[in-house]
Image 1: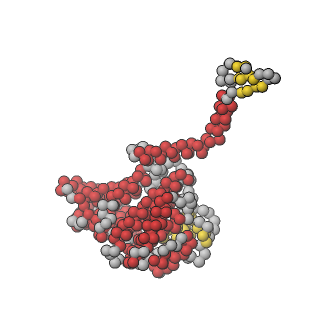
Image 2: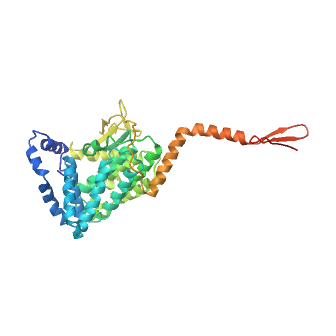
Image 3: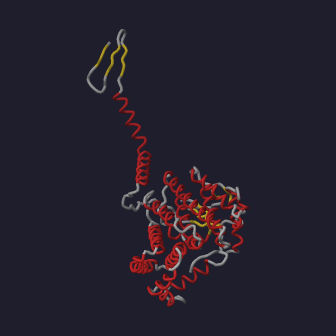
Length: 395
């Protein structure tokens, strides 16, 4: 049930199979009960644990993603925890690093409704990138499951950077969006700016992995998916101002990726804005209806442009998301990371200033007026009046 590429698979077929497996009375529901049995899950984990670090991490990540897709995540994690407890004393690095990555990914998935900027959500993404760094130079780590994880990291951040409209492949919208549509979306410019920095760093990490692996593989389907991740990031970040310093770094790194010979992406070198959108939509025509580009919009009424770029002629369809609700945040325990504490403090001060700026300025003016000395000029003298006390001086 792993999604590999829109060239090779149809999401319509995968969704239909999932329905037949998980629905009571479904054609394959009896088989589903066997698939989620602990013995079956453990049997599938066994071969993965015999592989190298990168291959083990990507294989177990694929199994975890399948459990998400088929709605038996908790049962899968329980089986994995039992197996880890039994064999952890062997000192197996593959199991150790895989457990670390899957724990972080599961925390990331559990925060789809949390509004804790910039707390554990952003912290956890950076930890995931750090955990993946242990295997990203391995050929076997470059796999559909790892690309899927980068796609979901990217979508979750694009969704927060551009809460009212964003451009993504239809496959991303179908596979991941349902988990993130209830995420708290803030109107704060500061928060969006920090999320933009995080998104750029995620894409930079992905670019570095592709550059390191690209020369060792000839898998065209994975290469095309990789280019799509980078282009979608560039479109959504590059059309939203102000741009971060990390965006400039990402732009330079992306051009390095597009020059890789095996990716066959030199046609998009140097393209920005509407030209990049037009080229991406043409590339997706090659999927022959299995995938396309979607504009997810939170606006009501007719939408005919994205960031001021007309959609006409780009074959981009609009999908309306549910209205954005400003609701009370779900707060986690205070972060222990010093950088995050500083960002939280800056956010609180910024929010306070926005709400109370006029009242604070008026009180400051009143205080200055009351405390400042006043000068009264007579014919031959000057009277200095101290309003802070009852004393006057004349000279």
